Image (tube, rainbow, N blue to C red; front, top):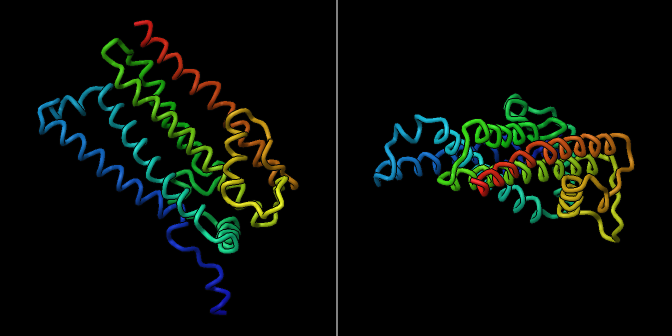
Length: 242
Protein backbone atom coordinates (compact mmCIF):
# COMPACT_ATOMS: atom_id res chain seq x y z
CA UNK A 1 0.00 0.00 0.00
CA UNK A 2 2.85 2.39 0.86
CA UNK A 3 4.59 1.69 -2.44
CA UNK A 4 1.36 2.33 -4.36
CA UNK A 5 0.81 5.62 -2.54
CA UNK A 6 4.39 6.69 -3.28
CA UNK A 7 3.90 5.85 -6.95
CA UNK A 8 1.00 8.32 -7.10
CA UNK A 9 2.97 11.19 -5.56
CA UNK A 10 3.88 14.12 -7.83
CA UNK A 11 6.87 16.26 -6.76
CA UNK A 12 5.92 19.82 -5.87
CA UNK A 13 7.98 21.31 -8.72
CA UNK A 14 5.74 19.52 -11.25
CA UNK A 15 2.47 20.62 -9.68
CA UNK A 16 0.71 23.29 -11.78
CA UNK A 17 -0.83 25.05 -8.79
CA UNK A 18 2.43 25.14 -6.83
CA UNK A 19 4.39 26.61 -9.73
CA UNK A 20 1.70 29.13 -10.63
CA UNK A 21 1.27 30.39 -7.05
CA UNK A 22 5.00 30.85 -6.50
CA UNK A 23 5.35 32.49 -9.91
CA UNK A 24 2.47 34.82 -9.05
CA UNK A 25 4.12 35.79 -5.78
CA UNK A 26 7.47 36.43 -7.47
CA UNK A 27 5.90 38.48 -10.29
CA UNK A 28 3.86 40.49 -7.79
CA UNK A 29 6.98 41.31 -5.76
CA UNK A 30 8.93 42.36 -8.85
CA UNK A 31 6.06 44.49 -10.18
CA UNK A 32 5.48 46.16 -6.82
CA UNK A 33 9.20 46.80 -6.48
CA UNK A 34 9.36 48.35 -9.93
CA UNK A 35 6.43 50.66 -9.29
CA UNK A 36 7.88 51.71 -5.93
CA UNK A 37 11.30 52.34 -7.50
CA UNK A 38 9.77 54.60 -10.15
CA UNK A 39 7.95 56.55 -7.46
CA UNK A 40 11.05 56.90 -5.29
CA UNK A 41 13.25 58.06 -8.16
CA UNK A 42 10.71 60.72 -9.07
CA UNK A 43 10.00 59.31 -12.53
CA UNK A 44 6.31 59.44 -11.68
CA UNK A 45 4.15 59.91 -8.64
CA UNK A 46 2.69 56.72 -7.19
CA UNK A 47 -0.92 57.96 -7.55
CA UNK A 48 -0.23 58.71 -11.21
CA UNK A 49 1.16 55.22 -11.79
CA UNK A 50 -1.90 53.55 -10.33
CA UNK A 51 -4.54 56.21 -10.83
CA UNK A 52 -4.97 56.30 -14.60
CA UNK A 53 -6.27 53.63 -16.93
CA UNK A 54 -3.17 53.63 -19.12
CA UNK A 55 -0.76 53.24 -16.20
CA UNK A 56 -2.89 50.63 -14.47
CA UNK A 57 -3.09 48.65 -17.71
CA UNK A 58 0.70 48.84 -18.06
CA UNK A 59 1.20 47.55 -14.51
CA UNK A 60 -1.15 44.62 -15.20
CA UNK A 61 0.67 43.77 -18.43
CA UNK A 62 4.09 43.94 -16.74
CA UNK A 63 2.86 41.65 -13.95
CA UNK A 64 1.48 39.10 -16.40
CA UNK A 65 4.63 39.14 -18.55
CA UNK A 66 6.83 38.56 -15.49
CA UNK A 67 4.55 35.76 -14.31
CA UNK A 68 4.62 34.04 -17.70
CA UNK A 69 8.41 34.29 -17.99
CA UNK A 70 8.93 32.81 -14.52
CA UNK A 71 6.27 30.10 -14.83
CA UNK A 72 7.17 28.98 -18.34
CA UNK A 73 10.92 29.00 -17.69
CA UNK A 74 10.40 26.91 -14.56
CA UNK A 75 8.10 24.53 -16.44
CA UNK A 76 10.54 24.13 -19.32
CA UNK A 77 13.53 23.42 -17.11
CA UNK A 78 11.72 20.88 -14.93
CA UNK A 79 10.01 18.95 -17.73
CA UNK A 80 12.97 18.86 -20.11
CA UNK A 81 15.44 17.71 -17.45
CA UNK A 82 13.23 15.04 -15.91
CA UNK A 83 14.22 11.41 -16.76
CA UNK A 84 11.81 10.00 -19.40
CA UNK A 85 10.42 7.21 -17.22
CA UNK A 86 9.77 9.48 -14.25
CA UNK A 87 8.29 12.14 -16.54
CA UNK A 88 5.73 9.72 -17.97
CA UNK A 89 4.83 8.48 -14.48
CA UNK A 90 4.23 12.05 -13.30
CA UNK A 91 2.24 12.94 -16.43
CA UNK A 92 0.07 9.81 -16.05
CA UNK A 93 -0.74 10.69 -12.43
CA UNK A 94 -1.56 14.28 -13.38
CA UNK A 95 -3.90 13.16 -16.16
CA UNK A 96 -5.98 10.96 -13.85
CA UNK A 97 -5.95 13.30 -10.85
CA UNK A 98 -8.96 15.54 -10.28
CA UNK A 99 -7.89 19.22 -10.50
CA UNK A 100 -7.93 21.16 -7.24
CA UNK A 101 -10.08 24.21 -6.61
CA UNK A 102 -7.04 26.46 -7.04
CA UNK A 103 -6.25 24.85 -10.39
CA UNK A 104 -9.80 25.41 -11.64
CA UNK A 105 -9.81 29.01 -10.37
CA UNK A 106 -6.51 29.74 -12.15
CA UNK A 107 -7.65 28.00 -15.32
CA UNK A 108 -5.37 24.97 -14.90
CA UNK A 109 -6.55 21.40 -14.99
CA UNK A 110 -9.05 22.03 -17.77
CA UNK A 111 -8.68 21.12 -21.43
CA UNK A 112 -6.99 24.42 -22.14
CA UNK A 113 -4.86 24.19 -18.98
CA UNK A 114 -4.74 27.94 -18.45
CA UNK A 115 -5.14 29.02 -22.06
CA UNK A 116 -8.42 30.83 -21.38
CA UNK A 117 -6.80 32.85 -18.59
CA UNK A 118 -3.83 33.73 -20.79
CA UNK A 119 -6.03 34.76 -23.71
CA UNK A 120 -8.16 36.91 -21.42
CA UNK A 121 -5.12 38.82 -20.15
CA UNK A 122 -3.88 39.36 -23.72
CA UNK A 123 -7.34 40.56 -24.76
CA UNK A 124 -7.47 43.00 -21.86
CA UNK A 125 -4.06 44.40 -22.82
CA UNK A 126 -4.83 44.79 -26.52
CA UNK A 127 -8.43 45.95 -26.19
CA UNK A 128 -7.61 48.23 -23.26
CA UNK A 129 -4.91 50.01 -25.25
CA UNK A 130 -7.24 50.34 -28.21
CA UNK A 131 -9.94 51.93 -26.03
CA UNK A 132 -7.53 54.26 -24.19
CA UNK A 133 -5.85 55.23 -27.43
CA UNK A 134 -2.20 55.60 -28.36
CA UNK A 135 -0.02 58.44 -29.49
CA UNK A 136 3.61 59.02 -30.47
CA UNK A 137 4.54 59.12 -26.78
CA UNK A 138 2.98 55.70 -26.06
CA UNK A 139 5.59 53.48 -27.69
CA UNK A 140 6.55 51.98 -24.33
CA UNK A 141 2.98 50.95 -23.58
CA UNK A 142 2.60 49.32 -26.99
CA UNK A 143 5.84 47.38 -26.39
CA UNK A 144 4.47 46.17 -23.06
CA UNK A 145 1.25 45.03 -24.75
CA UNK A 146 3.28 43.18 -27.39
CA UNK A 147 5.21 41.37 -24.67
CA UNK A 148 1.93 40.54 -22.92
CA UNK A 149 0.42 39.02 -26.06
CA UNK A 150 3.63 37.08 -26.78
CA UNK A 151 3.67 35.76 -23.21
CA UNK A 152 0.04 34.69 -23.49
CA UNK A 153 0.71 32.93 -26.80
CA UNK A 154 3.67 31.09 -25.25
CA UNK A 155 1.46 30.10 -22.31
CA UNK A 156 -1.00 28.53 -24.75
CA UNK A 157 1.85 26.60 -26.39
CA UNK A 158 3.16 25.18 -23.12
CA UNK A 159 -0.34 24.51 -21.79
CA UNK A 160 -1.21 22.21 -24.68
CA UNK A 161 2.26 20.67 -24.74
CA UNK A 162 1.59 19.54 -21.18
CA UNK A 163 -1.87 18.39 -22.19
CA UNK A 164 -0.49 16.25 -25.02
CA UNK A 165 2.23 14.81 -22.78
CA UNK A 166 -0.29 13.81 -20.13
CA UNK A 167 -2.69 12.30 -22.65
CA UNK A 168 0.06 10.21 -24.24
CA UNK A 169 1.37 9.06 -20.85
CA UNK A 170 -2.16 7.96 -19.88
CA UNK A 171 -2.55 5.78 -22.98
CA UNK A 172 -4.28 8.27 -25.29
CA UNK A 173 -1.49 7.75 -27.76
CA UNK A 174 0.12 10.47 -29.90
CA UNK A 175 2.65 9.05 -32.35
CA UNK A 176 5.79 10.74 -33.67
CA UNK A 177 7.80 9.72 -36.71
CA UNK A 178 10.96 9.15 -34.67
CA UNK A 179 12.73 6.04 -33.41
CA UNK A 180 13.06 7.23 -29.80
CA UNK A 181 10.29 7.55 -27.25
CA UNK A 182 8.83 11.09 -27.40
CA UNK A 183 10.04 13.58 -24.80
CA UNK A 184 8.57 16.86 -23.63
CA UNK A 185 10.37 18.79 -26.39
CA UNK A 186 8.53 16.70 -29.01
CA UNK A 187 5.12 17.57 -27.57
CA UNK A 188 6.26 21.18 -27.33
CA UNK A 189 7.18 21.17 -31.05
CA UNK A 190 3.76 19.73 -31.86
CA UNK A 191 2.07 22.45 -29.82
CA UNK A 192 4.09 25.18 -31.56
CA UNK A 193 3.01 23.92 -34.98
CA UNK A 194 -0.67 23.74 -34.06
CA UNK A 195 -0.53 27.17 -32.38
CA UNK A 196 1.23 28.72 -35.38
CA UNK A 197 -0.52 27.31 -38.42
CA UNK A 198 -3.07 24.85 -37.06
CA UNK A 199 -1.26 21.96 -38.72
CA UNK A 200 0.03 18.64 -37.45
CA UNK A 201 3.56 17.97 -38.61
CA UNK A 202 5.24 16.69 -35.46
CA UNK A 203 2.76 14.36 -33.79
CA UNK A 204 -0.37 12.49 -34.86
CA UNK A 205 -3.25 11.73 -32.44
CA UNK A 206 -4.22 8.05 -32.44
CA UNK A 207 -7.20 8.13 -30.09
CA UNK A 208 -10.40 10.12 -29.87
CA UNK A 209 -9.36 11.94 -26.70
CA UNK A 210 -6.07 13.05 -28.26
CA UNK A 211 -7.85 14.20 -31.42
CA UNK A 212 -10.38 16.21 -29.39
CA UNK A 213 -7.50 17.93 -27.59
CA UNK A 214 -5.96 18.89 -30.95
CA UNK A 215 -9.31 20.22 -32.16
CA UNK A 216 -9.73 22.32 -29.03
CA UNK A 217 -6.17 23.60 -29.40
CA UNK A 218 -6.76 24.49 -33.04
CA UNK A 219 -9.89 26.48 -32.10
CA UNK A 220 -8.07 28.34 -29.32
CA UNK A 221 -5.14 29.11 -31.64
CA UNK A 222 -7.40 30.35 -34.44
CA UNK A 223 -9.30 32.72 -32.14
CA UNK A 224 -6.08 33.93 -30.52
CA UNK A 225 -4.25 34.53 -33.80
CA UNK A 226 -7.22 35.93 -35.71
CA UNK A 227 -8.45 38.38 -33.09
CA UNK A 228 -5.92 39.12 -30.36
CA UNK A 229 -2.79 39.09 -32.51
CA UNK A 230 -4.58 41.01 -35.28
CA UNK A 231 -5.74 43.64 -32.78
CA UNK A 232 -2.19 44.00 -31.45
CA UNK A 233 -0.80 44.43 -34.96
CA UNK A 234 -3.33 47.20 -35.56
CA UNK A 235 -2.03 48.96 -32.43
CA UNK A 236 1.50 48.86 -33.79
CA UNK A 237 0.32 50.17 -37.16
CA UNK A 238 -1.58 52.94 -35.40
CA UNK A 239 1.54 53.93 -33.46
CA UNK A 240 3.65 54.02 -36.64
CA UNK A 241 0.99 56.08 -38.40
CA UNK A 242 0.81 58.50 -35.48
